[in-house]
Image: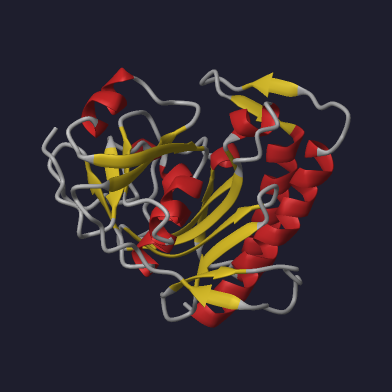
Amino acid sequence: MDYQALTHTIRRLALEAGDLIMEIYDSDDFDVKVKSDDSPVTAADEAADAHISEGLRAAFPDVALVTEEQSASHTLEARTFLIVDPLDGTKEFINRRGDFTVNIALVEDGVPTRGVVYAPARKRLFYTQAHGTAVEETGPFAKEGIGDTTKISVSDPDNSALMVVASKSHRDADTDSYIAKYQVEDSKSAGSSLKFCLVATGEADLYPRLGRTMEWDTAAGHAVLAGAGGRVVRFDDHTDLVYGKDGFANPFFIAFAPGVDLEKP
């Protein structure tokens, strides 16, 4: 894999998809449909998916591609594949809360090694560079030229005063019960894969997810967090979260800065 070409391509496609999404987001109204799994989908999901898919297939025709909107096949033989959530946080999008993202990642041997997370309404762009380290780029986000970037890294957490981030749309009593095991200085809510990025930048130390997610929801954020020195592990046994699973469903997981003393379930 040409990681330099990958970085430029997924960054550009995420920005272009973000433009398509914001055009619909800023419109007076948009239709919301319900998929077979009862999750919502909008024209923005579909437009972003089509654009990213076309771009990735043109640039990397020999690399398998998995996207949320085209995941009818639940078995993947390839050990290297691209995985896309064209609009993560559709509920945030529908409710016009802004915490939605475009996610594109490369998975190699079960590990998300490169990725981009773009939050167009928040004007925040995170991605891994060719050599794997993670950065946040500041605007104006030119499509063909990378702008000013800042290397990001996880916090050196204080276990007596942790900063926790949790889901905005899917927080529940089990999550709150688990968070209560820690000494927490502050807890915030955020939507979509932005939660991974808040841990990656040191704005949070810990993100537990005790709810259903799919690999396309997490791969790009996982890659960015790993590139910033963080980890994502299974909730049940604290082993690394892996990708390419049959059906693409994730177990519960914890994303964190390595200095956090993880509590057992």
